[in-house]
Length: 272
DNA sequence: CAACCGACCTGTTCGC
DNA sequence: TGCGAACAGGTCGGTT
Image 1: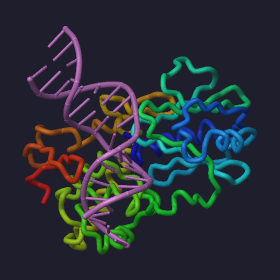
Image 2: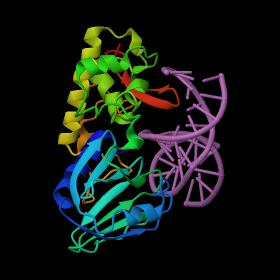
Image 3: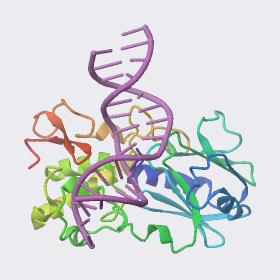
């Protein structure tokens, strides 16, 4: 599933491939993908526009346009952006939006489960006002303490709450809790200063390594980069999807336990 | 206001 | 082996 490291990988690829390119036409075949403002809005505000830059806030991908508006893409669970210099070698089912550039290259939004979204908005990004600071670019140790203050929820639940901090999802929340040596169900209002610091440092380490490895691609290949290639970060996972395997720190068995409606992987011996 | 939970989806895996 | 059930999970809206 695309979380911050996966979206950041796609952003870096987009920065290389589409910045400076001008959109000749837009084809929308999946209406659910453009449900926020409709197909007409997406097409009318993009044809003739040049992409001048890329940004990311949490899991939101932001493409800056030459009229100061912004093309927003959220991959959610199964969305992928695929770029090709010309006509794509392989046509993918579930292609919902296609952007053709004036130089013959093209970008496609493919999304089997149709949770993903594409829309165009103004530069002040009104749809993202409720989203917290980006976990990679904006978060500091002090800011994390401030964001968690007064919250009564489990560490994992807090980490995946985009209003508290943006970009962390199910996989990296489990990894962060393991690196910090804290149980995912631990209430954040009971974390001491040093433990808060440990969570912050773990966040830096886990996200940094995953970005370096170009994100996590699990067996179902629900995430690939702009060229359709898998990431390599899954090889470094220390708890996620390792139920029954040995903890890499203490050798104890990794377990899977429900937290809220989801499940979390952890080591009961060295996470306290 | 904050926490919680169901709904949204479809491809894949699981269990009988 | 086959088929239906369960599962995967980010976000939103409704409820507690």
